[in-house]
Amino acid sequence: MTTTEAAWRRLERALDRVFGSDENPLRQLGGLGFFLFWLIAVSGGWLYVFYETSVDGAWRSVQWLTVDQWWGGGLMRSLHRYGSDAFVVVVMLHLVRELALGRFSGFRWYSWVSGVPTLWLVVGSGAIGYWLVWDELGLFVATATAEWFGALPGFGPALVRNFIATEAVSDRLFSLVAFLHIGLPLALLLVMWAHIQRITRPRTGVSRGLALWTLGALLALSAARPATSLPPADLDALPARVAIDWFYLAPLVGSDLASPEAIWALTVGLTLLLAVAPWLARAPRPAPAVVDPAHCNGCTRCFADCPYAAIAMAPHPQGRGEIAVVDADRCASCGICAGACPSSTPFRRTEHLASGIDLPWLTVGALRDRLDEAIDAAAGSGSAAGSGSTAGAPPLLVLLGCECAARASELSGRATALGARLAVVELPCAGMVPPSFVEYALRQGADGVVVESCPPLDCEYRFGEEWIAQRLRGEREPRLRAAADTTRLQLVEAAREDPQRLHAAIVAFADSLKRRTDAPDRASQEEAENA
Image (tube, rainbow, N blue to C red):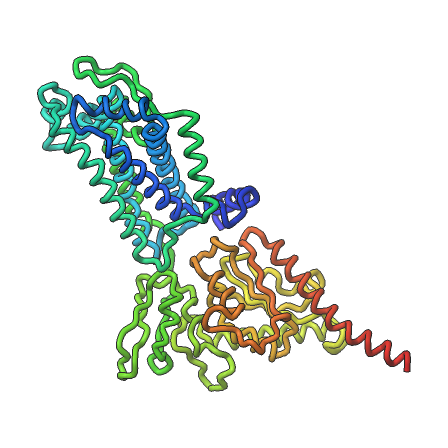
């Protein structure tokens, strides 16, 4: 774990203690961005109904909304303003979060690159919104924007004159600006739609609690500090000083203080750096999932469970129904598809255990072999450390751990501290665990099975913790059989930076199993004494 990732996770955990993980805004930044976009769109639509797209009517109509209709129009204007500022904050936090957690390269490159244009569209939409008010700040925005673009080849002083000369500023110009203020957000929505095309079930909304808290905070801010206009624009007297909204107008201020060429170089350079970041930090990727036509029956479970839309269904080459097809560029190599496959069962006694879809470097057969070896090793260590037999030895627990959660491998060989002999098998994601492996481990002599996953809304592969929980509860295919003894099963959610949670859960689970085992022994002893 890098320093930046550790710092971000500490911040998220701190907010978990304040809001709870289900309401933590840092865990719902993508959905919060969509929520704010629609809030801005609704409030902006209200304002547009009363707005006059003319030189003389622009400032007057906005002022009427702000002052004479303060209970409706004024509140909507303030909500539009502060909602837009919050949108910028959320977009930037979303970018920083994905960068800090390393979620921008490999199979995630498309989502990252498609998100880069939103930065320009967000700032452009907001800057044009200030232009529409046509007060002193709007005049500054018009002048600074014209000067900034005037520095580009093919433009020049004529462009600036078109926006500040009295004879050039016309009602037609304001119609164009109003069109841009509507068109750029529509383009932004299109880019946001493209941004989520490579993920399934995108979270484009937030929890009810976070939505209400966000709306309430913005309304309270709007009422406490309503947005107001500066004096109307005067083309004969450019304002010397204006109050700046740094969320949107920072590039224009920089262009005014430095030079337009320098700001162009900085902004274009940062944009290109963000765009090529996935290839600058590219790490070796595990091999993608592979479909075995002989064992794939076209059930579509892997298709439904894949978090990144990396699986499509196509006609089976042998002419029997459909077959899953993996897009290697989109595949995260998380193994969730293998955990969803009905043929991923360890009870099939064949020389070569194959599944319909598998990770080539960790097949279901290799997983079964790892589990058998771990159980044998843990059982052997119990006999060596105990009294020569498993009687009286600590319970034997199988720990199916997620590599992205608290490291289960670090607990191996700590029977004394844990009160249990531990057979550890780590997987790329908890969602890779086929439920049949739980029952298999119990039949192989394990006293209990612990399945470890990431906490809710914190899964490295989006749905691993959710899918495995639903499968083990019998709510999602493939289900854990109803005949399985679920009292000997424990699902633990432990973040990478919270190994104490996993440790405590294993200790408590081992103690409960030991008490269950000791109870019949004590009863038998009492019966013998009474006899």
